[in-house]
Image 1 (cartoon, one colour):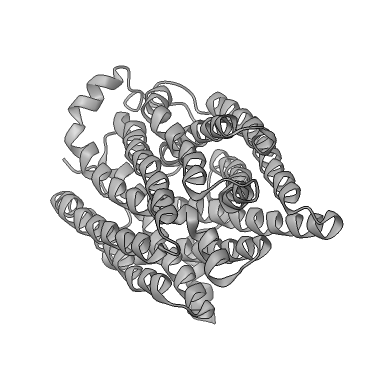
Image 2 (tube, rainbow, N blue to C red):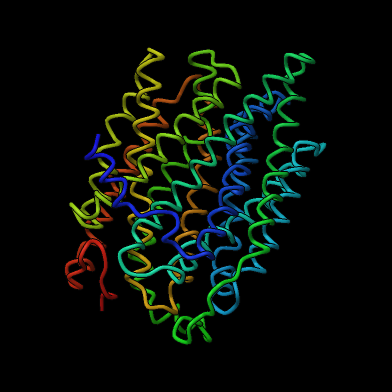
Length: 421
């Protein structure tokens, strides 16, 4: 126990981070709650409204389409302007979109609301890594980046669990599950608006001269090879994830008869475990380095995804769901930190934008294709999950092949170092 306390103590205390970073994390927590509710309940709500899997995939993919459309413009904007007003605007837009979404009368307007939400969250996610990098230094960065992911998923635990409880309570009161799901989705919009209390008080550090990209297109062209090295693995991961992740709630409902509140609870526990996984990633990078650490975590998730695909036993499926999520997502802060360290200051926002762009592309195509495949054959989750495994293995190989030379050439220490040249 004393050894565990010592390890957690070395992670870095909350008070060691700058005030701007702490306020940003509070705002990010509210956005995590807002994001988790529709992520968990929207497919179930659309199913209750009578939409088929292909139509559900169309609505879900609009979130990624928003990311695809705005990722690079957001990167260009954040490379030249302050973060605070951008975060305030996106919080307002996301809050309005999620609050109104369940009350839209037709498929087109449902897609439009989710598109606006995707646009807003894309800008938010593009801002995270450069902002945290600017407001931290040295050895604390690994801890701050991991904590940022942990805060987001920890808040998602509250969002998923709270959303499930709201649905459960309203169903007991009225017996109308569809309306209960609609009100829970509206609460997601309210949560996004709550982030304004933190973002409005954000006193950010001035953008350094070398960090401000006065000619973003020129920077983009100059760094195109490095940007692509980080983008390719992300495209493979997002393509595989987009194929099946949006339908995991329906998977548990159709294969095992799990109710909406139960699906919300599964997501809540999954995100709680992911949060704990993020907290140990600094120790993984210290032991293995950035690239080897990410690859090991990604490949370790594969057997558990296969277990999820083939088992007919609920307990084994839940185990596969939890462990797969922890291992695969634990690699995220590792690669984010490495990408910020690998890019020149004026290219960091662009790197985030390009990564978001290719990630959005995978999530635009994946849910539509996954929904279509599910409609063609009942319980075709095995095909979807095995295809996703193929994408993940390819992503791990690409991560090693494309990023390991950068780490070796720069001789980066796992805790800190200079930009590879």
